[in-house]
Length: 455
Ligand code: NAD
Image (cartoon, rainbow, N blue to C red; front, side, top):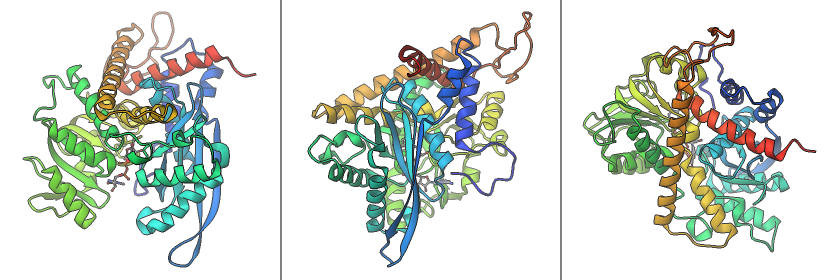
């Protein structure tokens, strides 16, 4: 999903970005065999399906869907389904790769996968979307399954879509327990309580722990921290409510139609009901309008991109005035922007950690379905909190470890290529993303090595 208005020359292809991130992490892991890294960078399988739908306006229209399986090294593939006009093969490949690393960071025994259909849910009826979902799942045949590749919600899909996915798969495979083929289902259809808010809640837990670990010197908690959120869908709107309840002041939010700002803090329930009534956050009385571009540059303690990829880039990273960035969205910061923010001392809590709460609770749903159990909300929240805290600690510990090494050239230098006395190349100081990737890559590589290269 890329901003077509962008004119600067930088890499915006999510798959190539995901590969660059792995390469960057691999440079900190010299013991890994080069061929193994090449293997771990590639998509294991990509399926493309073109299919017709008879839409409610009476026409027959063609749609293209994809399902990418990046890796099943640490468990079955796991990843959401996106309905958005900008879905492409490479976007799905990139998102699938990020899922592999995310599952490894939180130590959830899944590999990475992702799917999507290029369509605009806002221009289609509910009936059209139901048909698209059913046909897409039918076309994927046995490329998905409860023990091979498990689906979940993402941009443009929700619990109802997951119910249609389950129902279609169940029609195709009657007589067995098919509930674990998809997570994020309605609670009365094998879903777990708390899945809808899991990504945002996980983000809150990770952020709180990062504050305790000193991500913002002088601020150890969310109390009265100023927060700006881009994207007011499932993740963004729920994060806004949760961060406000935790004592933060959410001063600006936006959706694709634009944003609103109130320096004293927005009343989140009013924003949510205004969006429900009008379809957008824009125009809430008592707020100033703010464009999406301006919103990203507002001074605040915590900027939370919760919309789409490539929002903080070469052309705006130098103007970001947030003290830190917490990536609720997947891939909102480009590699060039990462370097700029690092140079400027603005830490980024990376997506593969910050939004891993969704897949973590999906894992709990999968286990519940496999074992035919029923889990309680407080049990799920307690487990999620522990997982997010452990993963956050592991990433901070890894960053400290990497930056203690004599081969680093300083926290904010960002330079590569300085030779040490022994003639080897120095590596730049590691940011939190690099630390998370090093942790994840090492874990996946270790499992791959234990299993061996088949045959
Ligand atoms: P959603 O469809 O519910 O919401 C997306 C929001 O982003 C909407 O408010 C939309 O108006 C806004 N938006 C779209 N394009 C925009 C733009 N260019 N500028 C500003 N706002 C824009 O999707 P979601 O499920 O909330 O997902 C948001 C992000 O979180 C995605 O990157 C997704 O991959 C990631 N994520 C979601 C989950 C999950 O459980 N849903 C889990 C992990 C990560």
